Length: 320
Ligand code: NAP
Image (cartoon, protein in one colour):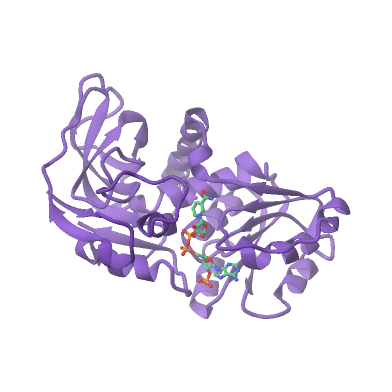
């Protein structure tokens, strides 16, 4: 089969298409024929060698994909050959024509969700769900500011929060992105490129402040986020690409909390609960992943460049 292989850390050019032997499922494993692969920023950090958890080289990147079950190992009972599935993690890497997964990493893909959309489910939607409900414990009726709502995680968070009865304020840097965020269910959208947009967020809450902030770029925004929180407010740090100065008094005066998160820290029980919620959302139409760009698997390097550029518009997927 064809797979993207990385032999040493470096820029996007280290992503090479190679012929490798087809992987085989062992007991308790599932072989998936991949029809679409989701590209996430974390795969660029790992590729460049700047991530705390590193695979052994050479490796095949990726954890998110969708396709058809090609074969099952002994003891697999929750699915059969030919089933439509999305995967949340693999054992052999998702940037490939085939991937071996543990049975617990494979989830049903409802018929109305395309493989490309299925490839956009795992990291983006699971992160959004965990941030909202397992970290911030967001409640219906609360205000959530999705700070970076136009990308993979932000679109998922917008849809999930809206369906759960929160008042959703999203931000995006481009006109196209802001239109998308409104279409996906945000009650209000703001431009994080303008100087006064957080004052406008405060005004939308009639000066009370937002209850929850999902933060995609904490190194830029965390200090100001704390000044627009309501009493008891929570900021979930989902993304950060550097350091930032904050005034701790802004948390004291509001009894506010800054909550870090990395999806990899979710326990097996938490992941199982997250995916049960995501599958339900896909089935009932409240979760509708948005794919903004499709590229062939051989263009993985271009996808890694694109995922780090401004002007996000949903998800970038690779087609093997
Ligand atoms: P993405 O699809 O590339 O989207 C990036 C988002 O950040 C876009 O909405 C972008 O908006 C926005 N952004 C750009 N400048 C911003 C600013 N000044 N303030 C607020 N938002 C800004 O990436 P993603 O997959 O959604 O991931 C978002 C971040 O979360 C990345 O840093 C990623 O590494 C991280 N992440 C963390 C976890 C975790 O477990 N902690 C999981 C998944 C992702 P415009 O392009 O419209 O300006």
